[in-house]
Amino acid sequence: MPDLSLLSAALGDFPATSRAKINEALADRAVIPHDTVSLLMEESELSLDRLMLRLLPVAAAFAIVPISNYRVGVVAEVTSARGTTLYLGANCEFVGGALAFSVHGEQSALVNAWVNGERHITCLAISAAPCGHCRQFLNELGCARSLELLLATAPKRRPLADFLPQAFGPGDLGVSAGLMSTGDQDLELEGGADEPLIAAALAAAQRSYAPYSHDYSGVALMTEDGHIVAAPYAENAAYNPSLSPMCAAKTALELNRPVEASKGVRRAVLVEAPARASQRRFAEVVLESMAPDVSLEYFAAVDNNASRSVRPS
Ligand SMILES: [Zn+2]
Image (cartoon, rainbow, N blue to C red; front, side, top):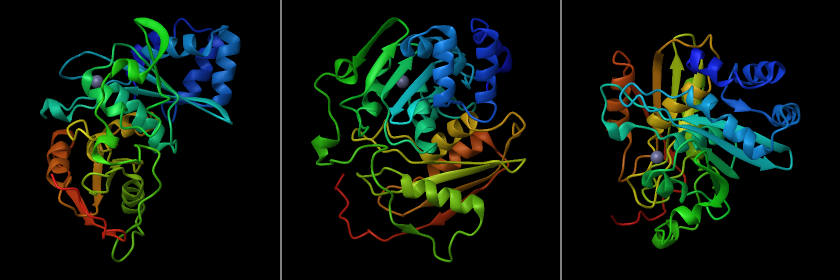
């Protein structure tokens, strides 16, 4: 959910009808659909790049920054045969938690596109230069070679490779798959997953990316008013920039809930295919910092492809 006064200020420069269209688009989730993108470009006489840069303060209104008070706004462009859809993202911190829990704006926008079904990103507009952590995180994408970055401070698209020379990536560990672009995993829960919250966590785990540990996992959160959002785990060749499913679910929730679903988290489910790595303890600690009265519900899934060997650490 955005900070409404910041959102209103960020929309101030747009013509009234564009403002109304953006507000309408953002009512349920931080996504500007392709027909609205075309309309905004036409009405505001903006190129796509200028529109993405103008939307950065709108994205930054979604930041949760109780520690730094430093807002990062990111707009992810996904262009396909349908047209161009824009997914907003913003940094997210956990008060009372470790700084390592933080979700960076670039990760947030990527998660937003991913949980909304996308498999690639064309370009990311970012309000500040990407940190080293994010450059490494983005290098894991299946679309990393074609990904472009557009910075508010130097508004000309440049390939990710310009920001990460001599990169270390999946290929160095013999992995050819890429984040977001892989097919679904074949996971099952004993006894099934007939409850929508558990089914959402299982579906997120199916979409997760864990080629190094095979710790396929996903988290689903339910708000007090019954709204459900789920997100998958995203692993990284350099290990530490990996994004846990609990942190991903928290940022996905902030970006994918209608204003009326503004209440706190009531339930949290982690579905995981047990491997040499585990999300369980980390998820519990992160959950405690965001919803101290909620206990993590944990479900171990059967990985029907578990005969794969786990790469030694
Ligand atoms: Zn970063």
